[in-house]
Image (cartoon, rainbow, N blue to C red; front, top):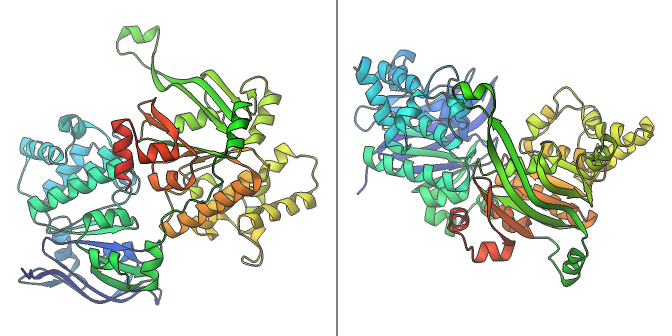
Length: 539
C-alpha cells in the first residue's frame, strides 16, 4: 500500500555565518515508516534533525519541510508559537546522552508530568498516574520507583527508557531518535530497538533513527539515507543498499567492520605461558566498596558491595585479554584494580611484581602499565598543549632527560601513532580541541606509549568513535602490538572489537566471571547463556 508522506523535505540548506553545512538535501518519511539517517560525525545528521524543529541556534535555514498528511505545514516557516505546539506533541525527539538531556534536579516522573501538563488536559493525581503508566509501557520493571527516582539513580538503560517515555508521552506522529543506543551495551541496544519497534507499531508513528551503527540499521530500519559532508549520497530500501551499495562512501561505511590482524597464539607462545612469561597474573582478585546500613546499626559498621568476585586470569606477553559484559558487570572496576588505583584482595602481579609493595616499587610498575580511556576529549587536559600532554610521563619516569631530548621523544611517539608536524603545523603547541575524535585518541595512545610500557589497559577505546575511525584506531593498536610486543587488557562491550583484537576472553556478569577461554572458542561456541546473549546481540 502506497502511504502518503508524513514529512517531505525539499532543498534543505543549513548555514552558519553564511557557510553551508547541509547542502540542499531532499528526503521523505511516510506515516509509520522507520528510516535510518547514517554517516560519520560531521556529516550533518544531527543538524538536519534538529533543524526540522528549529532547535539549532544561529542557524540559517532555507528550503521546505512539509509536515502532515492532509493539511501540511512548513516547519521551516511557520511562526515559533505554532511550532511549539508541534514540538513534543506531533514530533518528539530522543537525544543521544540521557544523563545530560534529563534535568538532574527533578525526578523522572516530574519531568514526564511537565510534558503532559503542557500538552494534555490532565491535572493532579491523573498526571502522576499517567506518567507511571507511560514509564511502564517502556518495560521498566518498577515504574513507580523509577518515577520517584532522579536520573543519576537509574542505570544507563533505565535512563534511556525514561527518555523514550518522555518523548512518547503525547503519542507523537514522528519520533526523531538521535543515536539513542550509542552509550549502551550491545544487549541493551537490542532491547531499546525492540522497544522502539513495538511502541512504533502500537502508536503507528514514524521513526527517523540517526546512527552510525550499521548493525542496528539492518535490524531496525525500512529505508536508509546516507549522508557525507552535508549531502545525501545514497538512499533506498535497507536490503537493497546493504546488498548493493552504489556510492563509494556507502561502500566505505559497509567495509568498516574491524578486521582481525594480530599475531595468533603459537605453540611457542603457549610454552612461554607455562614458563610464567606473563605481563599480568591475577588469582582470586576481589574488589569491594563499603555501603551504608540503614538504621542505627549503620552508625557502627558498614556493609559492602562486591564489584569483582574472585577473578583469576593471566595476560601473556604480546597478547590481548578481552573483557566483555554489560554495564555494572565489574569490567571497569577490574581495569582500575589492574592499574593499581583500587584496593583489592587476592593476588595481582605485573611482570612478576605486586602492587602496594612500596611507593618506589609502585612508581616503577606504573611505567609498565598505562591506560587509554574511552573518551579522549575528557581524558586529555584542555589546558595543556600536545607537547605537554604527551611528554608529561617523561617528567615522572625519565626526569634526567633534557628539554630537547624530551621533545625528540614526544615527536617520535606522535609519529608512531600517525601524527606529524607535516600534517599539523605547530603540532606541539596545539590543544586537544583542535583535533578530531580519532586524532585525540591517537594523542592518548602516544601519551601512554612514550614511557614504553609492557601492558596497556584499553577501556572502551573506540566506542566514542565512528566506524571508519574505529577501524583505523584498531589497526594502529594491532600494529603497535606486533611491533612492540605489547599486551592489552581490553575492556569493551563491542563483540566485533573482541573478534578483531582478543586472543582470550573473560565474560563478566555482576562481578563474576561466568565464562573464559580463547576468542575462537567463546565466539564460535559459547557455553553460558549470558555469553550467547552477548555474542548474538553483536551479530
